[in-house]
Image 1 (cartoon, rainbow, N blue to C red):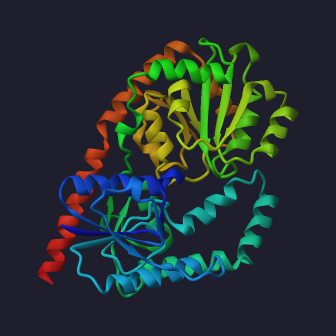
Image 2: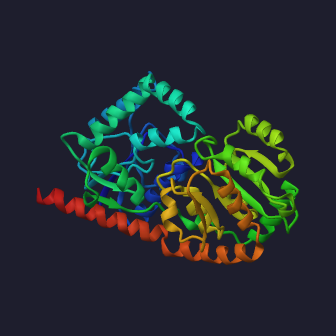
Image 3: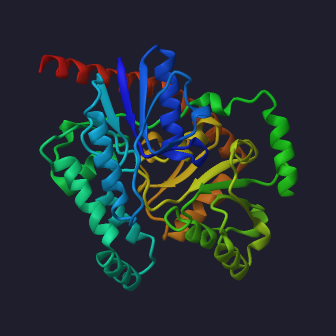
Length: 389
């Protein structure tokens, strides 16, 4: 098949959707499909050599208008080519398939308010968003995507997002395909994993018997780092629990919070790591108390590494877990006693060993190959529908 992938920036070093698109492009190329990329920026080293590139230039301008400009330019560029299937991954329109891996903006806007701990703060934040032109712009763009004249086939990565489409836009669940996110597990294969685990923990100055929870995120506030620190302060010191934080390079405010809570010695802020594999290898479990994640890739990465997971019901990836088998799912990050109890549970080496084994089994049930063939089946359906028309 001739397949067009549409996303403004494909720089896999930044992680997330960009890593996924590169993985998908490589897998499609390996099967002999022609891969076309419509983007403004890309890293050709991370993409298959046979990729056909279509540069979509986006004029400089206000942040609120940039997605509109890319989407319009991308739709126009697609008109000059005949592809069997075109798929967009974010704020675009005009493709045959839309796969919003970041979920719905409307749902994200609501969940972003949950990160504030009290009603007054949430009200102020809601007023600020109401006055934000970008919020209005993205809301209108989303309605243009899904409620316009040309309605795409919608693919989502969790039943949570499927429910959001019905909640916010009245789109029936049966008209939306659910294909869970997946990662390429080969990125986490290492023959010297134990050696790398030992060396990384030495850098952290952590002994072999101290349990280490790993937190990986760029958006510390949305992913629940503040309530996680609050919960860590409730864990008895004799549990010797350590926390390693990887992600955004600016973390001074959270360092100050850790000092105020008296847990500075238990928390290591590593900032950005271009390749976080050794952090997964060195940790004992992942803790991801997010306020919103359609289907968190870090959870999938943790499971692929055999790490038990603590996350929340606001994460579509929680649907992959059968608590307490592979880990624990809490109701809300602000419920710090509940989160603290989950942390304490993961300090138990016997439970952790059982959950680690179950995590590896869960990862094996839904692999990138399963994901790829499910998506390919949808592409074949789209091509047949286009040919019949």
